Image 1 (cartoon, rainbow, N blue to C red):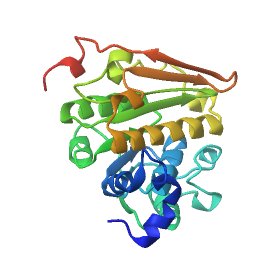
Image 2: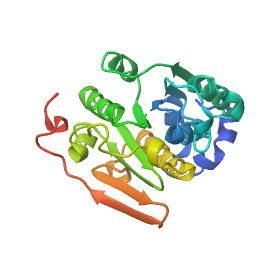
Image 3: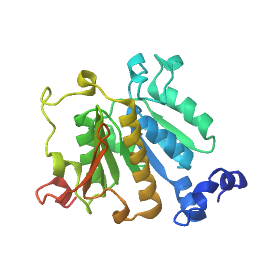
Image 4: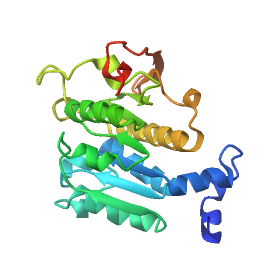
Length: 251
């Protein structure tokens, strides 16, 4: 049930015919885990909270640093030195007191990932490293949990949404984790805060669309979205499942 206050708070969503009261109830009962509370995760967290996703998991092991603040809008100057999970909890609790928030202040690895993600309906992968992206991809495929993976660099970004056993996965596209030193990092060559914010919004939108509609045709499934914001270039590339990939193997 939605309270009178919730009906008012989410009115502008509820009057969208494709959402309605029933769609808002779905969001309220849903559980989404955000992995990484940096540039991408900041926007994701804000907009899932304001949309009324009732149960948010926030996972990050890092503390807020001054160099984070150009893009990680969850965190303020006064948060420097705090755990990012703690900083995020303070902002999101003030933004929407109706939602429940679970913190995971830890480094995600093969030993702990299954126990954490298996209780969520959708995973938003917003980390800044390939190791975590491949780990999330492989584990979500194994457990059958839908997810979105995004990555950003300078003015550019890309993302894919994956429905296990139904669509191509991240590994279908990128195959293996690149060797260290073979790809530039944002720490070496930079990232615009706007780029992270833009792609974080799209990740949040993919989560909401999956939760409410469960419609593959509305998602970035079997597709890679790539955008270059410096030149206002937006492209979507079709992706096919690799028959030799783990996502095509019977679990």
